[in-house]
Length: 123
Length: 402
Image 1: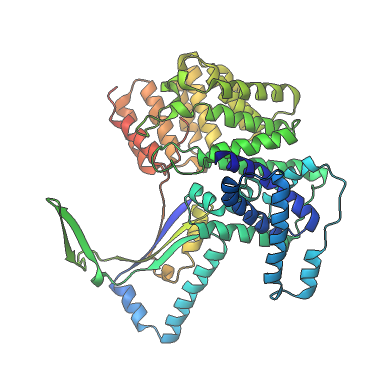
Image 2: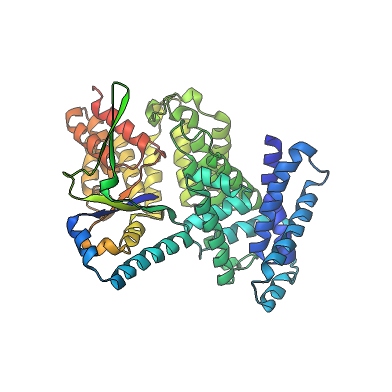
C-alpha cells in the first residue's frame, strides 16, 4: 500500500529549528539521511523531497483559457507543507512507524495518508 | 514477438534452476539469467529463435555469471568467492520438482511480502524489473532494491535451493499460494484506463498457479486457488462498464462471463473437494462456482453459499469473511435479519468504522426498501474507501433513486 507522509511546518516550528545549535541541526539532518537510506534499502521508498520555503510558491488559476499565477506565500494558511515521503509499505501501521522516525515528529506535525488505488473489490 | 516473450517466460525458471543446481549461488545466477533473457528478447526477434533455446539461454547465462563474478570478485574475500564458485552437490531430485523448489525459495518466510512478490515475478515469472515496476505502479529502482534485498536476505539466512523437509512443506506451499493470490488480486483492477499497458498480473498469477498445480496435482489447496482465480477472472468482461465503472455481481451481464474458465474452475474445485482435505481456497472457489453457475442473479443458491461461508469462518476467520457471511445470511433470511447480525458483528475491533461495514449496511437497508436510511452509510463508506472505482460506485448508489 502506498502512503504519503507529509511534514508540516509553522512559524513556531521554524523558530524552534532556527534556535537550535548547529550540532542539533546536524543531528536532525543526519536523521533524515539515515531514514532515506533505510527506506531505500528496504525497498519501501518511492520518493522523498524537501520543499522550498512557501515564499517561493505560486498559486495558479485558469480563467477564460488563460493561466494566471500569483506569487506566494499564502499568509492565511498557518501550517505549510515542508516536505514529504511517498512510501509503498505493508500497511498503515508500518507507515506510522516510518513517520515516527521523522525529526519533526516530536512537534506533532506529521500526517500519514493512504493513497487511493485502482483495485476494485468484488461486489 | 508475443511468441518469444511467452517462450522466454516459460523457460526462465527452467534455466535458472539448471544454473542454480549446477553452481549453487542463487543471487548471481538469478542476475545472469535475467541478463540472458534480456539478450534473447533483443536478439531472437531479429535473428530467429535458436534450435535449442533453453541451451542457448543456459550458455549465455553461464558466461554472464562468470563475467559478473570477475567484476565483483575484487570486492569480496577470496574464501567467499571460492565457496560461491564451487558447484553444488548434485542431488537425486527429478528435474520437474525444481520449479517448486524455486517458488519455495522466492516465497521464503524470511522475506517481506513485497520482496516475495517481486522475486517470484522475476525469477519464476521471467518478467523484467521494468515490467514488474510498471505492473505494481512503483519505480523500477524500488523493485530492483526489493529483489536485491531479498537475495541478500536469502543468502544471509542460509536459505538453500532444496526442498524443505516434508513436515515443513504444507506451510511453505501455503506461503507460495498466498503470494500468488496477492499477485492475482494486484492485477484484478477495475479500471480500464491507466492500466492498459500494465503486464497482465492476473493472467501471470493464473499461469504460475497452473504450473504449480501441474507439479503438485494432489494438493487440494493449489487446485482450489487455481479454481478460485479462474472462476473470479471469468467475470472480468462483465465486471466493468466501458467507462471503467464497477458493475456489482447481481447486475452483471452473465452472457459475457467466460464459460470455458468457469467449466475448468468448477471441475478443479469439485475434484479437489471430493479427493483432498478441505481448505480455505477450495471453499472460496466453491462459493465462486455457485455464483458462476447461476444463470440469473435470483437463481443463486444462497443457502449453500451461506453454509460454505460458515465453514470458511471456522477454518479461516477474518473480518471480510464475517461480512460476506452476513450478506449471505441476509440473502437467505432477509435484509432485516442480516442487519441484526451486522449490528452484533461490528463491535469487533477489525470492523470498527471499516468502510465495508458501512457499505454492507447501506446495501442491506436498500434491500429492505429504506433508501433514505441507506444513503448516509453509502456516503460514509465512499469517504473511507481507498479504491477509486469503489468510491465511484458507492457515490452512484448514494445518489441513485430507489
